[in-house]
Image (cartoon, rainbow, N blue to C red):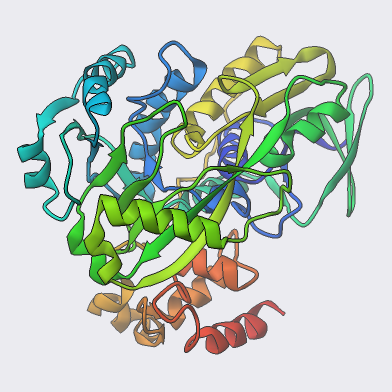
Length: 457
């Protein structure tokens, strides 16, 4: 049979993590996605937190994989330079009911294998968060919660997979599937892809692809989460993640610093029908303004740099839905909620085991690519414009293009020439932060676009 041994549909953080893991074996791997870049869907618009898994439902697959993924991605981020800051988090109780729920939350954390949580009183809450709004009654510390860049992991995973020989087939919308006795043909907008095994990591489209394989076991509901991003001048107001006490209605709105030096407020949670509805809304802004004024009123004395929305793949199922069908050589990876970033490497590890159980022989390659060293776009370590030795070697790193975010021509050039390159302004922004600052590309956008035009087209 010609074609691929394994084809993964979906080039988000989960799909690329699976590709990275399987590319280490003597297998021909392909990743297929309708987008023209990796991490273009749900993966690019989340709350950017590496979760300890303290509040997951004990005993679930999600709980196990989030806990394992926290360790795996934390180590991988250190090795590859993915921006990450171990800020810790504090759940804040605002009502007597929430205060009474704190011991149960601590017990749940312990059931999930995380025993570092402590209940603190209101005085300790305000000592840790002096700019918090009035009325907090107590809190629960979660010292292991970590902020992370949500964009770089997908790029790093895909880069390592490609370096190990995987094929990255972007700009190919899947239009159908034909399962044969020995192989499966994935029909796409740019031709057919023949494969032995098919892995469905299609996120918002996972239910549609699953039905094409003859199943009717879940429905994806796009859940829009809107967030506000505040100017860097707001960063001194909060040095850790401020979490709400979860309720029956969901996890609620948080306040969090970002690895880029901003502060983020959100998300909302609105179930929609349109899987492309990533626009922000007047109601979403009003809701976040009301919540934010109570949580941390001083935030709204600073500028809102931008607002954005992401769609989460909510399903009518209480856990991750990861199920193999050996008879069709098909594996579903569905219902991966916002914890998917944290769990990504553990999901990939879990899938290695499922494929082995299904009879797929996994023999490690004799020669493996080293994990890539990713460009630093976080504020915790020196950026290229701050490093004299880097600029001496290549003056392009001292030639600033985006002044709000201090992004150099050298960084933009590198993003456009990388193993997994940016192909448009959005891709450049996720790899360098260019156009993501206070002016939102008003001053630098034309220069960024001209560079893309010159180097890509």
